[in-house]
Image (cartoon, rainbow, N blue to C red; front, side, top):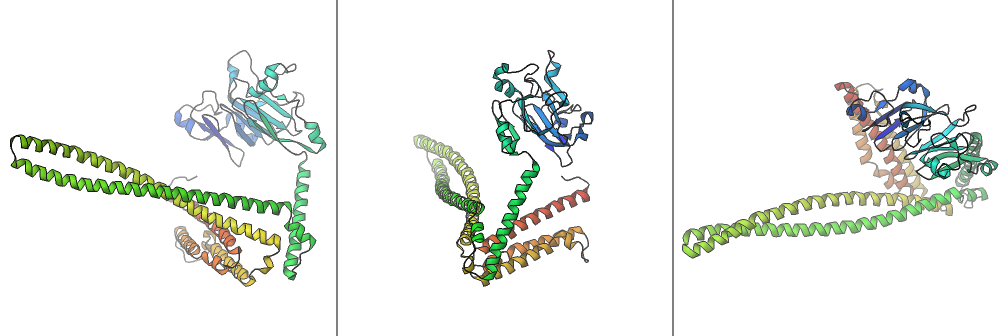
Length: 481
């Protein structure tokens, strides 16, 4: 996202742009003639750009970069500071690039293949497959001491290799710069193995080690042995498990503090609501009193003459003044009450959500702690088995509510009826979800199983809503995203 424009990339490698301004050509489209055309996201197809297969996009304040599957860079938009990397001549026509233009990185006789790119406000940077970092635009001018350290043929309007990046030390360790992020005057890189195969080999080796550890833990559990093997102990006390438990404990502490804060905010909101209600009651009482006083003064005024009648008229005018003032005060209190009630409802939702999340995270933390201590064998196995059976039954109920499964059966008059039956089955599912926790109430597994099933329910509910939107689009002749 830039200051007044944005890009998004599709799975097919097409780039769409939209925005509220195209002064510098940052939309990359020549057919933008109206405000509506600018605001509507449309593909960039200038000069056959759509055939390149873009894999990465980046936006500066008023310029854009894209990286293709072949490792080529394209840029467009403002080039006032050389941020497009296409070079600047004495003319003003090169200070903005109206359509995607190829950016050459590296020597002309052997251009480099790029694997990552980034944009700052008026800066750009990229990393090649060899781990070399190139910069251009405002950051290039800054990093090269305002141009003093440029060599022959180098300037801020074309990619220049950073010669100070310690790539040699990284390569000795088999690692090179992999991704880059750039701001106005700072640049950061993430390093990774130079060869993708090395990274994959390390990942596969890690998976094998974990699989062996899990098999050893399972063997100890099924054998009923109270004493775990050394391999099982190493697995359960590995860095991953220790870090996982630490994350759970940290999240539980955070949620505990959040629950306390929300409780205090709810109490303060309740006190404020009570104050507003008391003042509204006073306003109502004053309104009744003023109305009665007004009627009495009108009756009395009709019976008086001279000075006494003048005094009665003065009192009557005072009452007539205070009645709308009191009404205005009550309306103001009504607005405050509506606002506070909305705030209280929001706090209540956040509080209930935090309490539920705290219970879930606490159950996970206790489960991991029990696993590390070896206390899992001491839990109520009957309750655990009952919980898993209940969860499996609910999972089967959820799978049976899948519209794809239901639509293959006979007896339905149309897909709308399939969705209606599916929604009803989902409602039955969520109303009986507590049975899982009840079945394993003596273990920590029930809460975790219930949370997992609830997540699956939400995904299935979103799927049904999406299918219903599509059905509306088909029936009424409009396209849904």
